[in-house]
Length: 351
Image 1 (cartoon, helix red, strand yellow):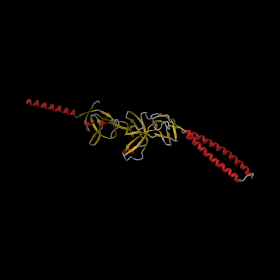
Image 2: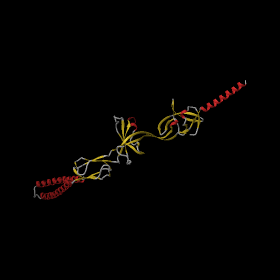
Image 3: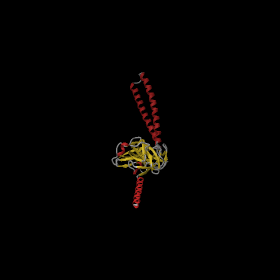
Image 4: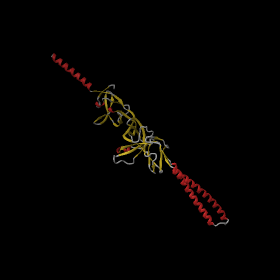
């Protein structure tokens, strides 16, 4: 009998200990946080290349011999700077000849005007025939036309003589030099290739599936591999058609004040801001748990968890946008949320 009582007491104590252990095992330790609001951006990550839409191959405008070349490959030049000079001795002689012809015709025309005036008086007094007056007037008109043509020839000769220098049309860098002193060049002969830094443009290819979300003016943040600092630009133009070779849309953004290390032809990465969601509710990613019914977040109800079905949006830098189901400021489970179920007993601990 005594042995039986001892055994019964031992069994009761074991069951009590088991019940206590069971209670501890069903309390899930968690940390909590709250949903807060912030601006969430929908970003399209892409890669592109820098192009110079204003690069120019300078060519000769007149046939002449090169007398001097003042710049070389890699030199920085300013707008209006003299790059090379030409021998235009024959052009200067043409100016002198044209000027002399103009002066001669001016004298002839002035004299003919006086003749016509005199003949008009004599014809009024019937001292000469009308045919003589008409002939003098016709000759005056012809001389006037010849004088106008001579003046145009003089302007052309002066313009050709003025082109004795090859001038930089914009500021930039000499990429190629095609001439040397002593070369004889003809009209249209390339002399320099000039690349500018004030007209750089970034080109990107956007997948066809995202093309409908591209608009003029959208912000683009561009990065170079060796520099994490972003250069901000805005979409300035895009192709009117999809490229059938790679099913993409070509997009361009003009770059203002590009860093010195940004050269035409360089590759860059970019973030295009497609949308901005103001005052969006966001939570850490580990607060959102996938369950058979969908995404849920566990709210705090005393010492129990409450499953809250939610709809998610943008995932960005470890945070998730909650588009439906959660208000900002609501206390929710964070660490340990994956081990919870609806109405589960919880134990909140400090993180």
